[in-house]
Length: 180
Image (cartoon, rainbow, N blue to C red; front, side):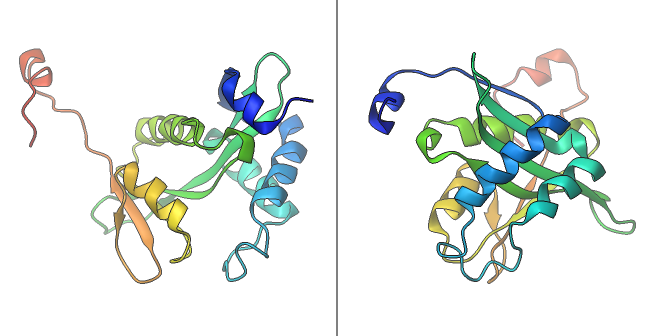
């Protein structure tokens, strides 16, 4: 079996797709490896067998997996949902509850790719703000989310990103390099 360094040197193709029922066990076991109480002892949410099944049954459109090709090994995932709140500025929010990438595939841009695919789906369903949270001492997660455009918004580190709607103006305006 190749070492982690050898695996990183050899480009392994990955495909991102919607989670299927047969993926639940693999996602759960990958989460068990990533979200340990030793590493994250004060997580207010805990990783358990219900996390994957609850998100999969309630919001399967926002449960994505990354798998290697051609063997189909699951090496990453997102579990997210939407929240609708009348009387608020955005009305419909996305909430990224879990994102995980196998350690051998971290720092390969796979987490960013998973997030971008999730954001596309949330945007298509009318979400204009995505919320994610993490422990204040989880510096790697904070750096990851900030690189994606999230902002630090409280002591508990609730992160939010506003998804801007495309301009409805003419094509020339859409292709303009000006920002608003």
